[in-house]
Length: 201
Image (cartoon, rainbow, N blue to C red; front, side, top):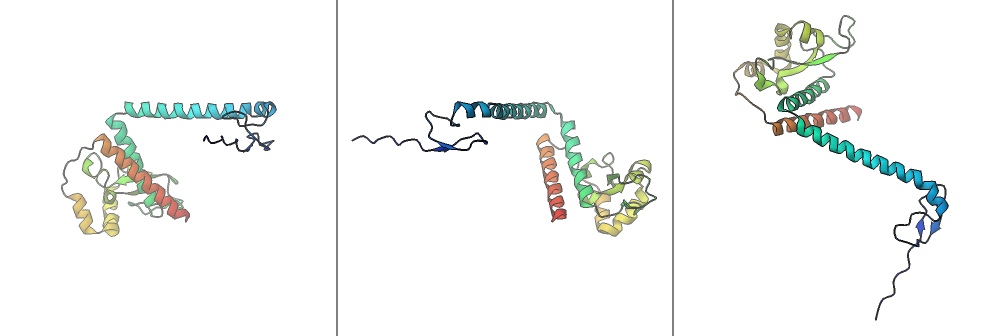
């Protein structure tokens, strides 16, 4: 005994201006009539164009990713880490001079850096150590070369003398792999998102 094929179920016409119910006469039929097919032609073409453009962007991004050097990955990881420091300390004053965004005397206005207490040149091992990096005004960080004496005074007040002594001690040399740098970038981008989400909430 053979089972009878089920009749096709009515579908809603994909032409937004129509929207009537119809029974498809062929597989994949989306509209009820040739007129509605013409009306939706440009819409479908736009979807196809966007899908192709999106795929091309993904392929281009993948190709660019393969061409990146270790220095490129280090720079991107540093940018993500610095963005985290600025977001973490957004309500804190400059670590070296106590200036704030609202201070009329702050020549640099609202521009802030992530200032390293021990620089990446003198101690690259602490490049991504949050205790070693704090929000700092551009004037102190760049024009005054970090304003180290004032930085240390306020750093002791902020994180304690024991932590500062640890920062000033010796540290094992570290050379990050590309995979480690990618992980650092992803980690601090995620932390920035979490901090911003908490600020909104």
